[in-house]
Length: 353
Image (cartoon, rainbow, N blue to C red; front, side, top):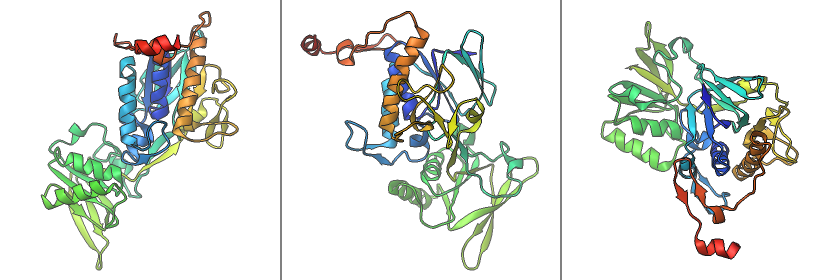
């Protein structure tokens, strides 16, 4: 069982920043996320999309913001359980919570902070007969470990950033990479589209457009697919492969969290915003886009604010007999769990004193 001070459900920007604020209070965090990497929507859906409303950054790419947050929390050594969904929660007699994932991994903490953004993301699946038959037998909806596809024949379907980025990445790992999209135009970043075209010209990516996969073939495991080229006349192409990865985006849902006894309103978790963003269950908080309260704004910077107040409240719950005196980082610096310390400039400390 994994034990920590604050268990964070969701490793998006709000969850990651909560690690930093908790670390300043010397509280340890562990994060659970159904996606295979930290960053939530920013990393999975639009890593190359510019964001303009982060204080101090006139413009920052979503993926770069995730990288900066990961660098910021590195001294506090958070733990991660990625590629797994928080499934069940149980409150023990001592008041701590045990959260179990869909793969049976148990996590124990006195504080649970739900920072699930718009919820857990479920893959949008293509409408294909026998699709479920081949799940985990050649069909996957996300790339958890690229090494799984080394020297394999891979077909990716989709036209967004994820489909383009993984086609580019796997071109140097897989034996064959085929990219199928129902249109000739792609929705992803222009530089990614140009890179795919360049790899196609080099013979490293097979590009089939406009087309779509219409049939899966194989006995016990997936052995090939039938691709229908949407031309005039239509043309069916048999593609032999080892792996089919449809990347058609993700659909946000609260998922199993909706059954945890929390007060829900319009697919969001109701919290008390007058104090600390706690839910109707003491010890369980909800921060970021996953919560709702009067005047709620679904902005990253609002999630950062909520994470800060949540951590202050969590400290008081964990240490009810301790009085915490807040120190500005410009005075106290930042001390990591790894022994590292960023000292505040002495001139600044003297001026503030």
